[in-house]
Each structure stands twice: as C-alpha cells, then as structure tokens.
Amino acid sequence: MKKYLFLIPGILLISGCGNHFNLNENVTDKNLTLINQDSTKVIYPEIIKNKIAVIGFLYTHCPDICPLTTHNMQLVEEKLSKDELNKVKFYLISFDPERDTPSILKQYAEVRNINMTHWELLTGNKNTIDTLLNEFNVKAIHDDTVYNKQGQPEYFIIHTDRISLVDEDGILRKNYKGSTANPEELVNDIKYLE
Image (cartoon, rainbow, N blue to C red; front, side, top):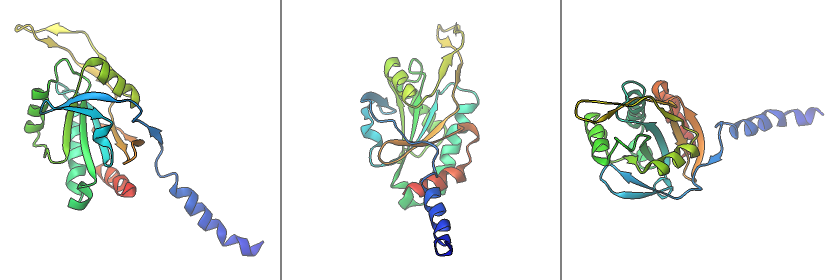
C-alpha cells in the first residue's frame, strides 16, 4: 500500500490541470455573416479560427459597463508580449445593430485608441446578432425607446456584462464579468491556452 502513496500527488496534479477552465462549450456550430468596422463582411466562426479569441459584448451608446469592458480588454492587450499577441484576437460584438453601424463602430474604436492590428468590431442584422448572443448566452433587453428632436431613437439596453475567452478550436473556455474583469487573470488564462 505504501508504494502507491507516491502516485496520489501526481494523480491530483493531473486531474487538477484539466479543470483549469469552467466551460467547455462549442460556440462555432453556426455560420453567420457579420460586418466589421470597415463595412467588410466576415463569416463567424471563420474569423475566430486558429486564434485565441477574447470577445466582449457591448453597444456604443452604453454609458458605463461597455466602456469599462473595452478598457479591461485593452489592458489585457497591453500585458501580452508581441509573440503572445500574434496568437490572440480581440472582438467587440455589438448587440445594438440598429444604431451601431460600421462607421459608428469605427468611431468608437478611434475615440478609445484601439489598436486595430489585433481587434475587430462587429455588427450584423438583428437575427444574426440574436443568434450569436444565444450561442454565448448573452442577454440584451431594450428599455423604452424615446425619440430626440432629430427623430433619432434613444434607449438603453440592459445586458449581460461579459467578456468570453474562446480557444483556437472554437471552444468557449471561460466567461468574465467584463466591467470588473481582472486583466491579470485573463492574461494568465490566455497563456494557459497557448
């Protein structure tokens, strides 16, 4: 019996490594046409294949959570080495396609000094976006719409506060609360996937 005791720590170590991430969900079983900030059509999940994807969900008129989510993702980008960045892509997906046109997404990126080398901001038609949100279990509910003097709709969206980490095989590995995400935790998780 004593000769087998030395195996226990090794077994515990091996079994613990497999549980690093709390999720193991394929989020690439739908082919969806999205539009990026340059008005270029892109196909999901093709755009996330062979890269580690850090995906934030937002809308550009958001006054609080979404800018914090974007900022936290930028902090993650800053902490990664050049070699690590070559294996990672950052995505912001808008759940407000009515207002978040490609030009608005581009403006959002410019205002926040997003380095577009490693980023893509995405929108699409409502059905496509709803399908993608369902894949990631992200909720987005419009409050009442009012119209300003120019006739433009104004509303807020109550939504899931989320950054998702997807591995190179299109498997969702972990979700983080976007506005309060710890950049160090995300960086460590990205390095774990490399």
